[in-house]
Length: 140
Image 1 (cartoon, rainbow, N blue to C red):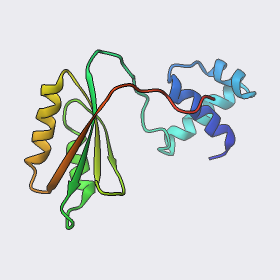
Image 2 (spheres, rainbow, N blue to C red):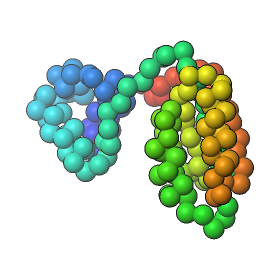
Image 3 (cartoon, rainbow, N blue to C red):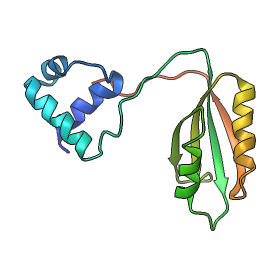
């Protein structure tokens, strides 16, 4: 992956619907080059999916999860990724092992996810943070 790929990815992170012609204009190359680069990034798995970010009035939260030392965090992460209202599952370093980013209808729904996580034998502890505001990082 080179600098041009990174520039294209920066634009798509902000708005995955940006037309290839507009991306090409911003990065100083042709539409065909952008199209080919995006297709290659998809084929190589660098771009995993295109997604939608919404402002629904829902509650967004980070549920930080510590698992027992002998637990395969990949298996736990894969299970949690199937749960409704979970947008992202990150395996992380530090005190916690897994972080869920959730977009739930209300605090009751967030609490249900916390309870569901705590009911797993592999889970040792949870911490939850409500997300009050969010901004996209680094402008292209």
